[in-house]
Image (cartoon, rainbow, N blue to C red):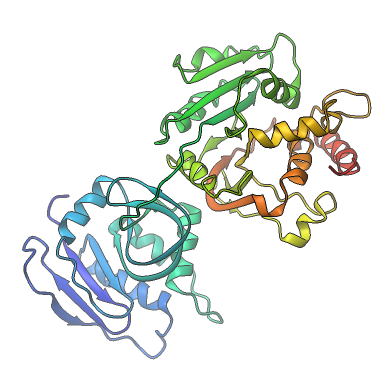
Amino acid sequence: MTNYRIAAYNLSEKIYTENMNDIDSVFKQVVINYSKKETCEILRLKKIVRNAIKSEEDVIIIYKDRARSYPNLIEIVFHIHKLNFSFLLLSGCVKGPVVPIDSDCCYVSTLDSIEVFLITRSLYYKILQIPTLKDKEVSIEDIFNLMIRKKCALSVCISKVSNITKLSKINIIIPLRNISVYVKELCDSILCQRYKIYHVYFLDDNSDDNFTNLIPDILSYTVIKSTVQRFALENIIDALLSLSFDNDDIIMLLDGDDILAHEYVFEIINEAYNVKTTMATHGSFAIYHTKQPFFYSYTREQFNKLRKVGWNLSPLRTFKFGLFSTYLNLDPTLSHMKDHYGSFYRTTYDMALFFPLLEICGYDRLQFIEDVLYYYRIHETNDFIINRRSQFANELEIRKKQLL
């Protein structure tokens, strides 16, 4: 794709086109007539896209208000094509994590306002598939924020942002057992991460399928094998107690049958901890097979009744190791991690571990990340399928424990 057919559209009334092989040429004005029914932005966007498909245009630039000059537009188009992006915000505002990709572009997770944007052919049919709600005005910002969360082959760049970012070490702790079917995809989702300051600890719970032979032999990967089955929580606690972490290190928990959603996950997590008060994060996730996204977070009112409301701490879950160190000082016998027999919980480890950590962390130091960072795999050996009764009993017991 070396010769681009590019058109520039005004979302209000008019369309402008330009032959981008001649960068000094003037936009040629072509009138698009919107009907009286086409008042909302989604209807007008769909009309623009249908026209682009008919005209065989590879890239379209859309102005919400007035046309603006971008003299280096052809370089911009080649740049986003090289980065495999299909959406570029040229003018507007963003919120949430902003992760530098290179000296010119950044990855963002949420669009606050859009003035000028560019989309490529790969998004055309996805836009046409968006349902139009008769009783509700849907904005351009709503449309693309939804597509970003669903990861419909959509990545977002914005003009250069200069930030001084602290680079923290991310320690990924993965409890797993007999995951030979999933381990390659798991490792691939980690190896593709652009952020490289990390170490992965695979906690093998006495597997018998030799999956560890499939794990790449690299310095940033460590396999810790248990000679008896101890289940996830005990292996995690043992790793936190026995390995050497600094209080400022980020601890990330990832289940062995799940994967990271894209190559910017570690960068987004590191950026989240550049907010000085952040001590823990959780994010949105999607079902692996359907890519159906889920967005759970706590209101302040819910957080104040943490053990009495629904479990909203959705993956991907991370915390500063210093938060765990504080917990150890308050509960040196790890009673919150153990059942009434004094044994570590065999299921529901996320609640057992994170309820006390969240109570120490507090609402204002917990950051919810809207971007989908995690793909959760549903299969016949999920705990909620084969151990649901145990999960339910443990949850009731964990919720009754004394608050920290």
